[in-house]
Every structure is written in structure tokens, then in C-alpha cells.
Length: 155
Image 1 (spheres, one colour):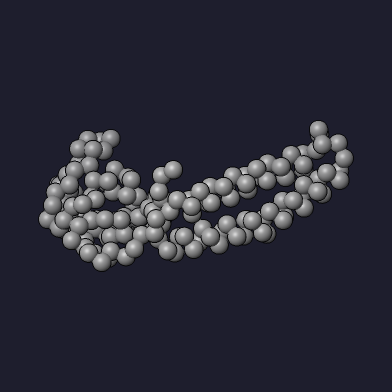
Image 2 (cartoon, helix red, strand yellow):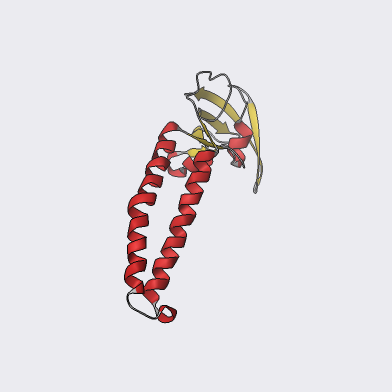
């Protein structure tokens, strides 16, 4: 299975969610199934069907989180900002643009485009890995090949 990169904070959030799902949520869904069974005939019991569907989704999410945590690599804070790597914040300027853009490279489970947190596996993220300040990078985007320059790398 593929290794997933997580920050310490995201790992803690997932562990907390997993604990909640395995305790509170699982207890709730078991009780809902018991209550629905009490209504009688299961073949036409929509409450039972809904509770079983909820149980299936719950087990899927539990399995997903367990797999992520079992195969995760913790992103350590970048001590060396000579090159772009996951955990760094990078300031770039696309060719033909005057305003620089700032991105933080994160693992796929921490992407938040509203905060310019992009995945190391995204087109831009992949193209940045290993670049240094002053280097020119290229992104093969759906709109064509985009060129940018790395202006700054920081923690």
C-alpha cells in the first residue's frame, strides 16, 4: 500500500475521529439497528435499511482511517529550506504574471485550496519538489505548459 504523508496535527485528528467512530458512532448505529429490528418485518423496514447503510458507511470510514494511519509517514518541519519538499511554503511567480503566489505543500489528506495548501501529488506540487530558489519550474497543465520561477522557500 502507498505511504500517505501526514502532519502530526492531521494524524492526531484522524486518531481522534477513529476513536469517536469506534465508540460513540458504532454504539449509536448498533442501537439504531436494534430499534429498527423491533419494528418487525425487515423486508419492508426502511429504518432498518437506513441503519444498516449507516453501519456500512461507518465501517468503510473506520477501515479507511485505519489504512491511512497504518501506512502514514509523518511530515517533519522542514529544517533545510534549500530545496522544495513536503511541508515547505513556496512563493512562485508564473511567467507573464506580476503577482507572486504562495503555496504550502502537504499530503493528500490535508489539501485545502482556500488556504493554498496543495498536494505534493498535484501537478504544481509534483513540479516543485526538489527545486531551489531561483529555479524555473514547469507544469504540464490541461491548458498547456506553464512556467514559473521559485522566489522563496520557507518552513
